Every structure is written in structure tokens, then in C-alpha cells.
Amino acid sequence: MTSRAAASSAKDAVGVLGTGSCLPGNVVTNEEVGAPAGVTNEWIVQRTGIRERRWAKPDEVTSSLASTAARSALADAAVCAEDISLIIVATSTPDSPQPPTATAVALELGVPAGTPCFDMNAVCSGFVFALATAERMLHGTTGHALVIGADVYSRTLRPTDRRTVVLFGDGAGAVVLGPARGRGVFATRLATFPDKRDLIRVPAGGSRIPASPESLAEGLHYFTMDGRAVRAFVESRIGPMIRDFLDEHRPPASGTGPRTHLVPHQANGRMIDALAAGLGFPPALTHSTVREYGNTGAASVPLTLDHATASLTPGDLVLLAGFGGGMAAGLALLEWEPSPPRHRA
View 1 (cartoon, rainbow, N blue to C red):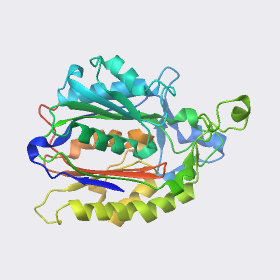
View 2: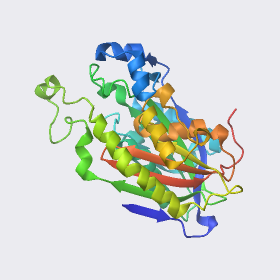
View 3: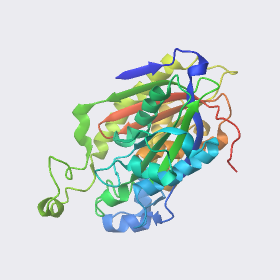
View 4: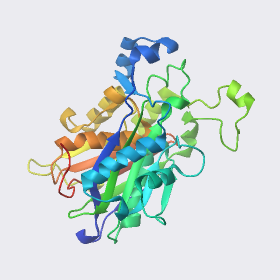
């Protein structure tokens, strides 16, 4: 487990200056995904809280969703693409195995040649892993980074697998990081539990099981998940990890202290409700998009953060909590104070 708490002066702090998101226009209902999987709308809502999700159209790919979200974040931060000094795209569904999807985003945005751009795959924890990496790379500089979470899971799902096909949607979320006036991103913690690595996987398509007619026939390129074991992992590991992290980095609660908002990975609506209740987060401070958009993988934390900004005020604390395949978890605590002017309607 790795952990970091900022110990330097505020002038070195790196914070979120702007947010953005992108969702495909294709709305997919519970009836549409449920019929091939043999389940009803009521069954899906009862077990997941999800009512619909968005799936990419044939001409939409991970980089196109990521680029649109990035443009929105740049506009929100009042930062030009020419001022970006780093791009990290968190994804486990890249456009192709190589080159990095981040390079397609950089080309689309017109980021200057020579700017470092790379992908990061920590599955659903990927955005928080990327955020922590970018914060450390920018620390002590005046640079700006685009950190993006984007996934198109709809193309990895077996239509008849009710454990997965009802859960996942496509989307992208992005933030611009840069010099902060306050504490910015002041604490992070990253952890991986490799003994649980097989709970969530796509078996084929890599060097262990290359693509072949046989692997395709066996359905080894589909996303698979042991849902019950994942839930047990979240209950036993994630709640205690978050509680310990907050005890270490958040000041004691008081009537006059800053509010702390929870922006968790949107794994499952019921799981989010249980996690927030166990941690003592009231519904008003727990932000969720899973009911409308499903589980959007690495996009879920930044996408939900973008939607949460309307209820955030300067000085609030925001806990970003990613968890999922690997199995892995990433936590980041930041002070909300985006740079003016804001461009949100």
C-alpha cells in the first residue's frame, strides 16, 4: 500500500482546476439488456439500482469520448490545449493495444508535440491512480495536466451474462490539474491485492491467450466477474481502507468544519449505498450517477465528480474512491477550490 500526504507549502500544491465529461447519446434500457440475459427491469433495479446506461455508437471509441470530456474540462478550467504539459488516460478498453489512446487524444486536441502522453490500466481504480501519478509529476511546477478516465465496456460484454451486461455503460470524465491556491490534492493512497486478480478479467487478447478463432469461439474475449466475491472484497477491504485514510488525513468533524463529499466508483447502486452508510456519509454528500449511466469503469469517478460540482463549494473536501479489477483501490482527498472563471451553466 502506498500513501502520500502533502507536506510542502501551498505554493507547490496541485489541484483540480476544471472538470468535464462525455456520454454517448445511445440510451440503453433495462428491458434491452435484460431480455437476452433472461432478467427483467425489476430484477436489475432491485439488485443494482441501475435504470439505464449509455452505450457507444459504432463510430464512437474510447479516444473520441475522452477527447470530448477533455475539451469540456479545458473550457471549465480556462486552460488552452497548448498549455497542457502531460496527458494520462486511464482505461482498460483502449482504442487498440498500441499506440496509447492518450496519443489519439493529444492529436485530436492539438496538444504540442513532445508532450508526454500515456495510458494507465488499473481498471476501475485507474482514474485515481492516474490522478495521483499526475499530481506527483506536476508537484513543484507550474504545468497543467489532463487526467482522463474513459471506457467503452459495451464491446466486451457477453449479451447473455446477466452478471455483467446489466451493469456496464460507456463514458468518459476528465479533469485539468494545475497550481492550486489552497491545498489541492493533499493526500492519496493506492493499493493492489494481486491474490484477488482473477475476480475480474478478460482472459484473452493478450500474450497469454492471443486472439485466435478458438479463443473467439470460446468467448474468452468477454469481460467476466465474480460478483459475490467482488462485493465481499469491497465490504472487507474498501470500507476499512477509506475509514483509516480519513482518520489519518481529515480533521475531526465539527459543526463549523468543511463538509466532506464522497465520490465513489459507481460499481453498483446497492453497493454504493451500503458503503456510504457504513462510513457515515449522508445521501446529500454521497454522489452517484450509476442509476442513469451504470458502471462506466475508469470513467465513473471523474464523470461523477463532474456532475457533483454543482453542489460543491470552495473549501469543501472531496474524497475520490476508486476500486475494482486487479483487485485494486485508489483514494484521493482534495480541497475543492477550482480556479475562476467557472464556465458551467
